Amino acid sequence: MTDLQELILHRRSIRKFTDRPLTFEEKRAILCSALVAPSSKNRRPCRFVLVDDREMINKLMRCKLIGALPLETATWVLVVVADPTQSDAWIEDAAIAATFAQLQAEDIGLGSCWVQVRGRDYNEETSSSEYIKELLEIPAQMEVECLLAFGEKNEERKPYSADKLQIERLHLNKWQHRAPWLDKEITY
Ligand SMILES: Cc1cc2nc3c(=O)[nH]c(=O)nc-3n(C[C@H](O)[C@H](O)[C@H](O)COP(=O)(O)O)c2cc1C
Image (cartoon, rainbow, N blue to C red; front, side):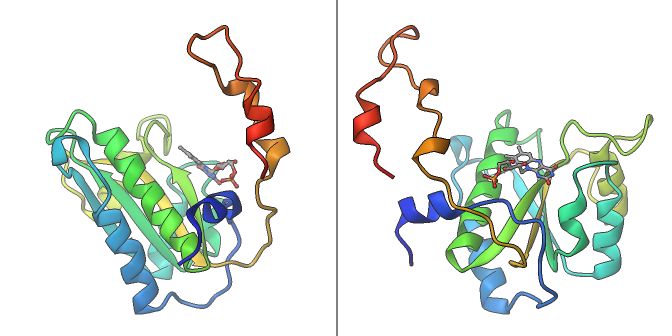
């Protein structure tokens, strides 16, 4: 297990993968993390559809016109689904579960990329979520939050460093007060 701070700084979206399939242990680690993610009132409204069939991944890639390219070489895709009738915080719950899965992938040396689905469109009549639900036979009341593309990394990306933090986004006690001391405290 790596140091969490190190892990977070090194995690980058990976959009190119080798053709090595994920092992059972790798998949299990990612799924355990997604399943154990916190949820509002512990309602656990999220479900996950595991897709390893190349033809199906190609079809998922067509869910929107731009931004789905990480699926082109992904060997494993997790479709993050939630039931809005179970929780009014389903978007947050799904996003946290997806993030847990991505951080777990990084921890075991794998790459991943979030592909946004909620709020995106397949075409003028059909949302990306509806297209995916039809494709995977997901019940009507469910919503698709995102697709997570996973695989062995086939590109190198620089980790984050101090100049990328944008500390101007921090406010001390009140909005108009900057937090200048953080300049000295953060030493990545
Ligand atoms: C909510 C959300 C939606 C995203 N949607 C997409 C997407 O549809 N396609 C894509 O290639 N990357 C997507 N990304 C990845 C972002 O582009 C990426 O996180 C951002 O550029 C910062 O880069 P980094 O992840 O390497 O730090 C998404 C990330 C988030 C958090």
